[in-house]
Amino acid sequence: MDANNKAAMRYPVMLLAMLACLSASPTPAATEQFAANTPAVSTDVRQPGNTTAPVAVPEPSEKALQYYQSGNILWVVSQLVGLAIPTLLLFTGLSARMRSLARRIGRKWFFIVGVYFIFYSVLAYLLDLPLAYYAGYVRQHAYGLSNQTFQKWLVDSLKALAVNVVFGCLLLWLPYLLVRRSPRRWWLYTSLLALPVMVFMMLIQPIWIAPLFNRFEPMKNKQLEAQILGLAHQAGIEGGRVFEVNKSVDTKMVNAYVTGLFDTKRIVLWDTLLAKLDTRQVLFVMAHEMGHYVLHHVFWGILVGFVGVLIGLYLVYRLSGMTLQRWQGRFGFDQLDDVASLPLILLFLHLISLALMPIGLACSRYMEHEADRFSLELTRDNHAAATAFVRLQSENLGNPRPGALYMLWRGSHPSLGERIDFANTYRPWEEGKPLRYGRLFEIPSQ
Image 1: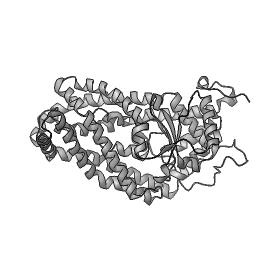
Image 2 (image 1 turned 45 degrees about the horizontal axis):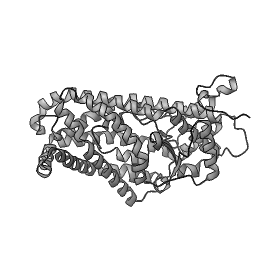
Image 3 (image 1 turned 45 degrees about the vertical axis):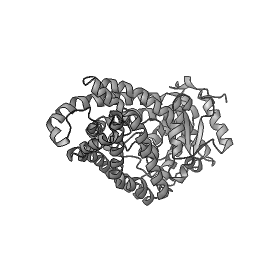
Image 4 (image 1 turned 90 degrees about the vertical axis):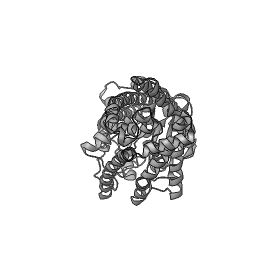
């Protein structure tokens, strides 16, 4: 997931889609950080030489380890801040006072919900702003990973806030209406309603939301585009669904991802990736993204998200009654259908998401691994695959062998070391063994 999408999820856009964050999105490829300052491993596969030799997993540099360790600390701090903000609003009674002010302004119930959500979103944004500024701007510049100006960072941050406010105001009334109409089954009905909302958000994200932050265009390198489209044809993907995005205005890191659904589904390459990887490496990355596309990982991701929503909202239903009974005097409300309960619901969802996150991340890692397998079977270019990961390492600063706790709660992809090892060894076609996904694509005759 790129930085803008992460920023967009920082604020509670709507109760309906909140637990979609429980499952790590399987669509972005190669988003994990890789180690910098690698040993002398050639990543230019266009040069002649032995391309069958295994590619060594580079040791992380001191700078990469610092980035990894500080990132872990930052993640913990971010989780604590995410829990502290709703807790503060609840136990100070500020949420109830905001609801009372929203009643005076909105008067009618629908508008009260919208006005309250605006208050909550803006206040949460301001309380989170110092950490967001450090994590998204200061730290990235300190490690030499960002090209972004402060003005663009701030404008993008405000755009993300505006997008969340708009969708929250349009949709937040629905779960509260369900809580009011069906106190015992609202969690089930809201979960069912969340499914089309998640599908709708996936549909519009590539065409309405992402272009607010960056410019998306057809690929400039037409020769490379023709090779990519030829590869897509082998994978059974027809049509010009490959886009180049000008992420170089924001970052020096490299990435690619699949996004959208149905007619809005597309593969997006960052211009930084096109500038820093050679043709064979780019084709491997593209085949990986095509694997997500052909294997329907976007739909599987939505399904995992839906299950997370169902479990999460059921637990909110079970926990909220006893909590309100115990703390209603402190909170200033005693019913879940009071919009002042939003921080309580978000607090529970955050805690539940932390508990369920290892499951969602495990699903994501499995899909990423299978996309790697698909790409290797399609391209049969193991050396390009392994050296692409090494090159990503040198550009993105990361640890090729992160610890178990990192993988459990942060690892949306297999570790770099695991991916290089797999790229070095997975060659069933050389042993006459069947390909797992061979039925899904065509290999041109030699």
